[in-house]
Length: 242
Image (cartoon, rainbow, N blue to C red; front, top):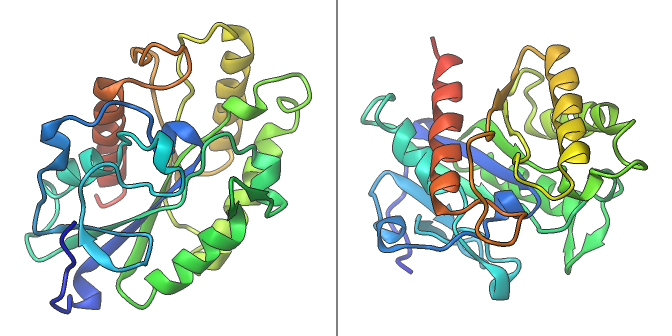
């Protein structure tokens, strides 16, 4: 893990926060192509030192760490932005976390979910401009008790995110749940609630995952799916620049 020692210009660093549960934290197989560093793509380690981004990015659950969509997102995005811009990826996703736990700032797997998110955003403001949030979550809410209010809770949480970032129009890119679940009907209903929310928020953007395959457990995207999600999220973000 290579520490970035040179000072980067704050005005030329774009920051993206990765948040949600395990399909954002990443459970897919990390392959050699995912570990090639790029001079313009940065992340942080658990000591919050800036490093050149390599998968896996998330460090909260080391025994389960895998490929997420972050590096793929950044590699796609740098093709469409000025060469002078660097990207800083901040991982905050924790597997198994429900949206109520995020709203309640629960201590989940030794992470205070919302406090950790806010702390990272407030620190990140000193190093660049927060340009967007990549969000994937909902599997833990895909049950009769979680589905009915999901879009309202999403609205409440995203308002907190944007208030913390001091940008009420901050783009939030949302990945759908996969279509391969054994609990397909409930997952489909969560996707419907995500769509309901997005219709009320012109600064949110949905990425389809209907063609993705799981990694063998029926829950988590495989490596191809994670890279595709990153690419699609980047393309959605690019639309906000035009």
